[in-house]
Image 1 (cartoon, rainbow, N blue to C red):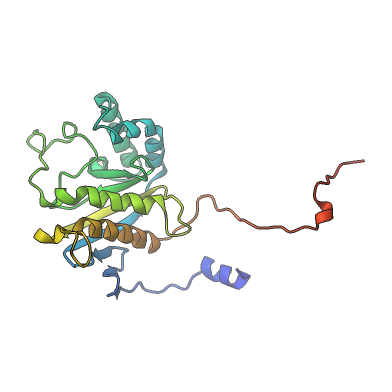
Image 2: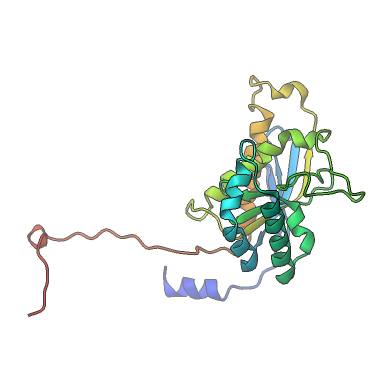
Length: 253
């Protein structure tokens, strides 16, 4: 990279953000980094944005990484309720200390990558209020009762949505490296009743797979429209030498 190009990047010309739309990818970007992504069959629309996580939050997630592994396997191993409650409380305090709303911790839908990493998927969807990483006994409704998710149509595709997030965080768009310290805030998610389109003989494949692909693409686009960097950039080079110097070493006289 030449010096002139580096200086241009360090002192960019200020230009107003523009909204653009790519009909081939069914995706648009708003002026404030909000990504609008549709599935191939246009039956589902996703709106999300990428936000950098405060260091206090990522450090807290790292501190409870072992607990997250237990929560990931909660189908067979029950994570200690008191530790889960402690984790949620510390996350709430970390968000509050960083200037975020304390209630942000309650809206965490998933951690990633591998369901244990220092990135979060935030649920801000009004029609999907129950999607949360926390057990039902942790999250309570306004009347104090546990909330139910069984009647929500979006709940049927929640695992596909989360899997798309996992794929996006395990391989970032810069050089396919894992992401760190990124929150993907889902602001809208709508699905039409596809009925028989779940059949594998449909031209675009199962609807669940389309959701996964759309979420992955939306997360990558949301990341790319924000300022980004490599946390531990590395330079790789190949050195060629003459055969006569191989096997020899230098020493002081």
